[in-house]
Image (spheres, one colour):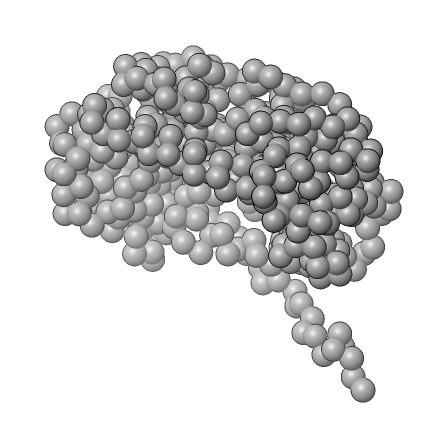
Length: 450
């Protein structure tokens, strides 16, 4: 009888992929313009990036970056919310504005013939936002409600609590980028206006345009719409990614919970770390695909969970590296034991070539999918702009993944997975799991409120 493994289709060599050529130029006001022209495309995507992410906030004002970004699409000095929405509908464009830790993005997608008018609207909303008091109150209330809703969800609560306990007290990375109730609730419209004045400036901004457009026409439009934008901001704030302390266990009580959300991890790497590719392969092997070690062990073999994952979040400073799963309450301790065991195996053993090959084939195979749309191409240029990655980053990406060896993954695991630094966090029913966690002796046990 032929085995199912023998019948399983084998991966073929990936088709060649070449990231499209792009160019960049800089206006006299400091704005850097990135152009990726694809004349055959029927739409163009425009992304304006400014150094106005959460890392630019004062901690007492946590959340103002996110709130400022959301307010941009609620009108301009000239157009109220209804008129602004009507203008976007007339042009048939989709406008968005959001922020992350390291930058804020205002963007739109349009047919090529509307790029100029879209740029005019984008420039107006970024340079002359309306900042209506009623819209501010509405969005602040929505954000506060979202935080409360997130804390009622055990998975989202666990994510927030992991950050709070992984990073040292006072570190910006110890919270979600969109703020916490104490800071969001205290924000005023004047705070948002002051943040906008200090952060939405051309000297450190990048404009990315990808898709169907005429290069000369677009450059003229950019100069017309944004060439007289002025102002210089402060250098980007460096965040010290300081751990809260040595290995320990934190238990967050959710009385009556039938599941426990577990997180095991520590502070990882920043975006410029030379171990980026080995660490990416290592994390994917651990929990980045369905056939990853964590998922096979916790889900397929033991039936503890519907899914187990691991993620690496490199930022301008070192972000978290976390293994995560939601498990049945009665297997909380065994699931943590197995998770720690899988982490240990990565440190102790060089991964087998067949496992490494499967993970690399996946990462290399899905690589071109992110560039199928003009929006994906625009997003691909963002890390080059924000983090100063080399122009050939994407051209060499597959080769860099392919070059990762089993020994490199092993070295990465030994350096990055430091057992003495692990934070082991459990969100569940303390009455049912507290004593078992204490007896398991994973580390000093702390009980925390949400």
